[in-house]
Image (tube, one colour):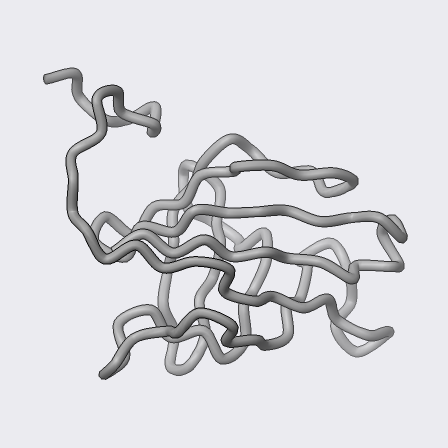
Length: 124
């Protein structure tokens, strides 16, 4: 399943900061579709913990962002328009308002792309 998530309202980083991420729940990877004011690599790995999704860099490690309430593989899955809080790792979560995420689009078709988008994918 392909899920497009919009992250925004990170006013303490930049009043116009946003990112649009494509999440692949099958491979547990994400790619950056667009962004402004947020330092993000082109792609990375996803981890799931309880009722949240951790957006990590391409080699895992410390999360770049935590999407509270986004459970990718829950029964029924996320839905278009679903929203929640996003905590950026460079900010102290206790010192200010978090940003937000919302699901813009869900594509349930499993078509193989012509070109891989992740650097660690093997060419076919």
